[in-house]
Image (cartoon, rainbow, N blue to C red):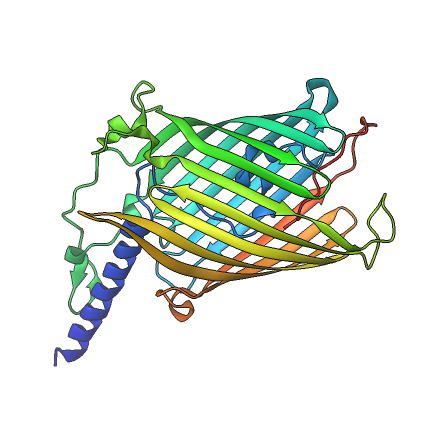
Length: 364
């Protein structure tokens, strides 16, 4: 008689446990949670490295959307939009980016932020340039308490009908200001860079006290959330009709390596792009090396995903789609992989600019 309600109850409990496990393991209200990841690295250049601001010389608008693990309860949805341009009068580029992240069913944990950056260009040699950048970011995280469900809310027969006895925390939002920096070097064929995000983070909720002390971080180290990114790549023309402009049928290849470190996790991304203008295809492999702090130092290696990307260019538009095929223990059938879409608008310069070489790197 009570077999069906019992099964229903067990299914509900399982869903709750899965949801809470995803939230607890992947994100938290604390500001030092890992930053969201994008797979189309160069389609979101300011997110990769603030020194990329102005590298297109003319105005550039970029829009990015990522849906991670759509088959799991509590999927992650991340979006970003940015603008950057080089200005001769200030010998560098200006960039602005807004972003947001929604985690959990209905947006249990929400993150929103806006960044402003300036990159200063140094011409070292006729064929070698450097850019140094500073970035300031305002970010807010908010826990939507009303979206949470707990075990004491369930009736064995009717499901979620009760109010919970769990107490809402006194603080459900945290607002911070932090600062980042980066540099970029490039020649006509090779480029490399390094970015350090969250170098100094201040909480606006406690008179600009470093957030880690506000949060009671056991380690007492505010640099726990520091994110470091190193990237290097090359671009080689296999077939090109004109040196001045890109033409239909031009072929180029671009191998790349990107390393990211944050909170004891190390991510390695190796990939290659093949461009047959106006089409581009790419493939990446992402794998991680996590540090487990026990009596003995242990590193856990995990191959996370294989990433496939397809992009097309037309006039001022660049549109791309990528799919992350999960190959880790989570299994792609469980997570549903990850979908990502990007759109870039490469606008013409409003007036004649100096003869400055732009960065020749992948668009996606």
